[in-house]
Each structure stands twice: as structure tokens, then as C-alpha cells.
Image 1 (cartoon, one colour):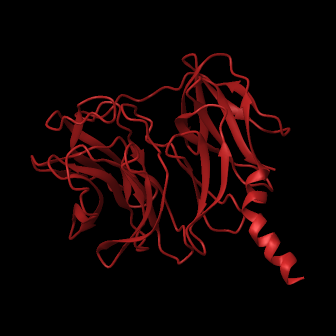
Image 2 (cartoon, rainbow, N blue to C red):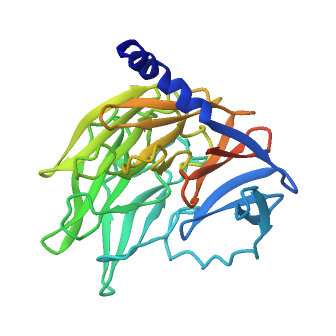
Length: 327
């Protein structure tokens, strides 16, 4: 009996991986983007937007009216996103476009020199950087990292000579400022991309998952903000959640993919040929690796399902769309 149990333990990762499938969905045209709006994924195919219908177990696209985008705030970063919050922060966006950093990893040489925050009472705050750095990012991420009921903001800050760091911005004594940073990567043109924010290891503290240098290193790292500092936790190698020169910085997804009640991560492999499912509870480990019909290209959308783990939408280099799910 003991040998049978040991055999099952050895085989369990492969068995779990075998349950996952990546199947193409018929699309009317080449897929160029996957976005998430109000928690719902949508797909751009041939310049038109579509939702995904899984009501009868079969995946189909349904046409959506062309979304009306409000005009960007004055001085906002081109192609940056305005995020909305439900706690003390009403809106936040990257602003003060600047060309003082020549990296261009997100498709152009324009980065943000400041962050604008509008609180729930209507007050506007600005966090401005000095000439030695930029926010090399497109979207500020809101999360209550310390459990005080107020949101902090997570954003990528890049030093012109020392590379990127993950910065946490919070309100202190009535004004917003950077309260913690990870160590810069050590040289210019070294960038990192947040992969998700959640309590990944089940310890009651919110973690920030980051892929360090997704084009050159590919290390998936866990960072936790506590006592005014960002502390590094476990890491795994062999990941990439961005393609250099593109604006798809959401090529990762958070969800309870193994059904244990703790969030997991889905992130492409370093060569983008596979989608890897990772858990950090009880230890950092890969639980599935799903071969893709073509290399990953777009952001990942999460499709909620009743009585089943979330499914994932992903656009591929060949222009097709896949739905990845475990049944």
C-alpha cells in the first residue's frame, strides 16, 4: 500500500497536467488582443470586440458593441489605463509623458514621469519622479497590501542607470509617496513585469508576483509588503509574461486553478510555447504545463465557470485564440 501511495504522489503532477486542454476557438478574423473589462474578458478579432460564451460547455464568441472609451485625462500617458477603485482611491493613472528614458520595451520611447491619484473625496494627488527615473508601466495596480482598508498602488519604476524596481505608493500623513521599492535590477534596460497580486501562499498577507526580466532572465518571484518593506519570498525559473516591444503586460492570470481555495498563477514559459500553472502553497511549484498550438502573444483573460476551475483565454502568434481549461 505504501508503494502505491508513493507511486500516486510521483504521478500526480503529470496526472494534473493531463487534465488541462488548450483548444482553438473559431474566430471571424485574426486575434490581436485580449482585454479584461469589469472582470469580463473580451477578444479583438479583425478590429471588432467579442465576448466569450461558455453557457453550454462549448466556447463561442459573441459580438460586442464597440466599447466607448472616455477621453483620457489631461496629461495622461498615451495608451495608459485609468483604473478605478472601491476603497479610498477613486481613480489613478500614469501621467507626465516623457522621453528621458530610451528603453522602449512597451512599444515606444514615451514613459510616465508621474502618477495622478483622485481619492474618494475628490482630492487630486500627484506623485512625481525626479529626472533619474520614470514609471515604465501602463497601469497602476490597486491593492490593500497591508490590510488597513486603504489601497496601495503597485507600479514599475525604472531608473535611467540602474534599471527597474517594483514601487509601492501609499498615503502617509495626508499625501501619497513611494513607501517601498524592490532593489533596482542593476543596469539600464533591465525591466520586470508584475504577474499578479493576491495571497498566493495562504499566510493572510497579500503578495506581489513579478517576472524579473521576462526577455532575458525569466524568474518568477514573490514579494510581500510588510513593516514598510518589500521582502522577497520564493521564486521559480523559466517564465515570460511579456514580448518586447508590445503593450501586452497582462500575459498572466490569477485564479484558484487547483481548487484548494488559494490563488494560483498562470504564466507562459520563457519561450512562450507552454502555459505553466504555479502554486505557492505549501511550496512554490509547477502543477501543470500545457502545450500551446502556437506561441503565446496576448494578455490572458480569465473565464469564470460554475463548479469548475476558471478557464483561460489567450491569443497566439499565429492569430488564433485558445481556451485553456481543466475539466
